[in-house]
Image 1 (cartoon, rainbow over the protein chains, first blue to last red):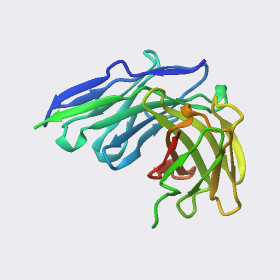
Image 2: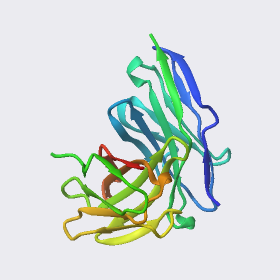
Image 3: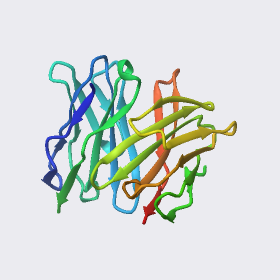
Image 4: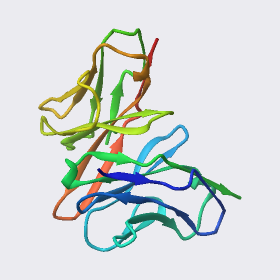
Length: 114
Length: 116
């Protein structure tokens, strides 16, 4: 069965520092992987998606994610955090071999301190 | 262009009733997905439609159903409401450009359903 884990409930980082939000997954086939962000009062937004190809995927707002097949990870990264990046981040996986159902992680709350 | 719209934005229903939520996707988007968000269960996928066909469905009971119309607008229906159905229901429309290899997905503001 497919699953996705976000091992950190919360990540704290200082503004200007690099940030990483972790995600690991388990699927039976080749995964489709997603990152979403939910800002307070601004709803859920799609950040980026990996299907195949380059392991480094670039997304919105300067975010990128690195697909690592051997570690079954898809960590979200940003070189320099902004206070405005403070939000709830969700990783999601879709397994083509599992009927294309989307499974979400529990979410990681990112706090960026000025 | 206009974003994804969902109606109604707020809804209060009583246990046992049924409810229909509506979603209008971004113009040109033929794929619509529905999600449920609750504090306890987090984000859960309900179903996805493409060109009026349900492509896949999450692990929800048969009380949850949906459909998509020829203009890509979508509705979801929940029958025999239970207290646990209280949630934010999100709709998203998406488009995949095979040639450009791009993918875009946009979410609506959601419908907040409260079941009493």
